[in-house]
Length: 595
Image (cartoon, rainbow, N blue to C red):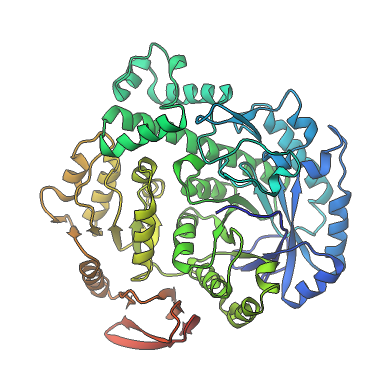
């Protein structure tokens, strides 16, 4: 889910111009480009090389002592070989900051709530940090902004490696090489005084009076300055989270959601500032925010919100968490893809590390069938494995910029997922459902900005806890002709731990007509497939797959379908449209394209 090595990255397929074009498709894989390597990359269709341009790499000798010679040499190699550049601008992670800053008076370390212990990663609430980062971006833009060498820019803003997340890695690795070993683990990294002050300010802005906060939380604070985080200490934090579902209390739930809205919102605001500042100095270059993980609450990432702020600056998001299994990759990347499409942000996918030959085809399929603009791979995954290189050459023709037609949405239950400790049941449900039909995610952020309007059906298959206003939004969409199928969620309740959301959605029955639409509750996958197939057929939309067999189908629009067979034997898939059935033979562990 996070970058495992400081490798450089390469881009294939797509125009070599620096200005972004919406229909470009970039294929990237890593390994720094020497003269010798550049020839091989060129033969593979590579158009650009991405470098880890850390703040430390250019100003380590002292404040104002800039040294760009390392990157000047790389740029010269690229120009000589007619390749473009993707600089990965990184500041904030411990390895990416100069020693003089980490040891100086303006450094503010991250501090965990679990152990009240600091590490050298910069706190995103550090008020001294923005001006130094802006200096870094400005100096970079002065040197390379008009050089014509830049294809796109990737932003590394926080965390262990540079993703837009908090510290998440429990083990030692290459990021210790520069700063030395330090305290790190998955957890809540907001224990510094600047973070707490920002939390107080956010609560005051939300509630206006301490009386209103006490009423919502069931507390007795005398002022906002007395408020503390919901829990401290690893055991206490886990115990607090456990009772949110097992022994629900309206005050505890609201306190937790207010805390997470602030915590995740702080990372979104930090990303917003980074992208906006970079856009100020690099007005024409495509900009991607680097993000990672799978969005558990302690990482602080809301992928939909990150896509929203990227779109505001005509930028994009790269999610860095794929591996070899298609279904898992779908779970990890589809939220970014869905939100990117909705808000208008471009997006790309990157593996967390190694992948096998099957993963090469799976990732190409995932990128095209998600509507991505960019697919990254580490060069060693291809060039040091003959089976992987063969798979790449066989399937690269399927990598293209597409606009898939996806009429079904799956509810991404952000509120529920922020409360539960074990997310595995949701992950397994996502993977099972994708083997039946293609779909996008719609979460609360997307719902509140009208995302459901473009979908014909909504499946709710996990997440019993829902904000009352969100249940009303779903019901209103249903009134206007929407169709909702609820699978194995036996009863909804609100953040306030009452049954209001159940009443809004289903009343007192398991099948309810609301205006021009309907909401139905089913208890098994077969019933879900039957209901959904009929609904899509009635709308004269294609019906495909609907069986769990390791074969995946996507409607790419204009009569084109793409299929992936992950099984070890050939399979026959059926596509039904306008009363006709098309049978497609998909070879084992391969992609098929049907026009």
